Image (cartoon, rainbow, N blue to C red):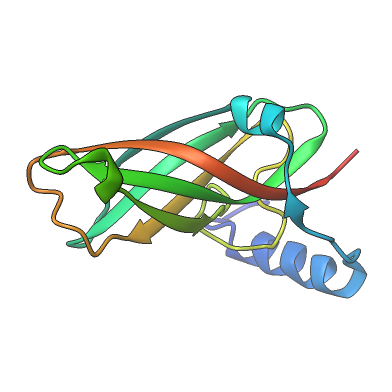
Length: 133
């Protein structure tokens, strides 16, 4: 379209259609193999104390709506780790409720209340989602 400089109108139409014709999604813990199919990266977020990352859902059947991330400070003992739940958002940090569809990327962020100044180890220890196919 001539003169169009933004995709905000298209996003608004998409969201309105999704809201009007949405199918009820039943979210449940995913099988361990689905968690094994997740590839992700984690780093410091844009705000102090915030961590953010990307997750690639390599599974062909399950959509991922949230993950549980275990963070362990490098200065602490493994028993001092803490689990954080993070909702999966789309590439624009929007929450349309669908999460990361099969074989697509999603974004996540969460706020940590731990001292991570000495660095940290992390891993995904759980996930929730739904069968999309």
